[in-house]
Amino acid sequence: MEQLLAILASLAILALAVATAGHALLFKRDGRSVILWVGFIILLPLLGAGLYWLVAVNRIRRRASALRPQPAGHGDSVPGAPARPPDSLRLLAKLCDRVSPFPLSDGNTVTPLENGEVAFPAMLDAIKHAEHSVALATYIFDDDPLGRRFLEALAAAAGRGVAVRVLIDAVGQRYSRRRMVPILRSAGVRAAAFMPVRVPRDLASFNLRNHRKLLVIDGKTAFTGGMNIRVGHLTATPGVSPIRDLQCRVHGPVVAQLMRVFADDWNFTTAEELAGEAWFPNLAVADGIPARAIPDGPDEHFEALKLVLQGALAEARRSVAIVTPYFLPDAALISALNTTALRGVEVDILVPARNNLRLVQWASHAQYWQLLERGCRIWHSPPPFDHSKLMLVDDEWVLMGSTNWDPRSLRLNFELNVECYSPALGNTLRNWFERRRREAKPVTLDDLQSQPFAFRLRDSTARLLIPLL
View 1: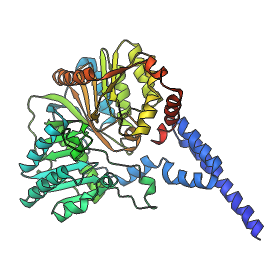
View 2: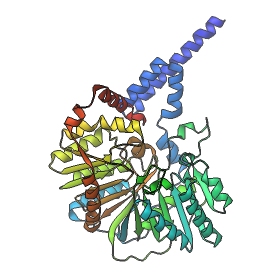
View 3: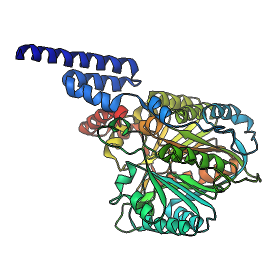
View 4: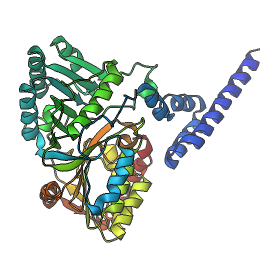
């Protein structure tokens, strides 16, 4: 009997392993990911199959789409005069029309705010003067001196009758030594954690993180970009590894689009609907630039940003400037970058010389040669660590927000970006980019080939893990 049970158990494990490997072959998109998972399942059939079904099955789109409600009139009810993009970027705007739920709207002002020394005082002052509502979404809200300043400002706003809602990612809040959601609640602030992970029930949704950074005041002023609420984004803070970053302050119809994204996330998390004049006031259209919010995530907006990046590269005629802290493009993006450079467009990519995630740095280095040999230029910016996310095309089209050039941002995270069509804003950010590039060191093929063999082997091995990073 024991021998029969052992045979049946072995057959069951074999059947599970075969079925799991077959699922990986049929449904995993990245070939390297397939090889890694199938190899793991063959070596450790029970453990490999179990981990695959827990964390690797792409139930992202089905699960998130099923959980996330579709508000009536989503995108249609957002105000704003339709905008006409420049003729040279008309096809790019048409692409974005189809991947974003929002229209390109005229009459916006977008002001870049460099580093926490500029951005955080502006955000705190806006909270201080809020009259009706404050909506704050962040990946990390740290319990540090800066976080406590935001806590006090939010609590004071709630105390004077302002409707305050704070959404913190459930995994991101673990970066803080004390979780801020209960602290905010005890201070009288309505706060919630986005998609809590309860093991083992929610282990499959562990990677579905809300990486958006957004503050909306009275439905009229918004701040968005890459900055978390933590003291590290103050570059002059002693005893802390400083982080450089880029935020933007937004006025105009696009604020209603940003607020709609927050309202959807809040409704998804708490089932509370945010509506009415406090959150969505009538916004007068003034002189300004065409802009639009582009949400991205493992739901109805799956891979929207990847399509936008590819479309922007295809439409570039003179120059492309990219700033990202994590640069792990897949084969399709590498081909798009190379094709752009081979057409004679200047393609400059600015990444940190020393990354805060070593495995990402090694994997990124292993891909450089594919870009450098086709004419793309890569620059290493010196410390402090640069967390900025920016893309410029022909100094006329601007993309700013929370998305990194890596699989996690482009496939797993909920992200938020703003596209703008403005030569004036493009020139401002081009000057900012050129200041950063003058500080940076160009990376050459000779640099890569002169590295010790052990380093090159390490980097190439790390590259195999890109689908899992």
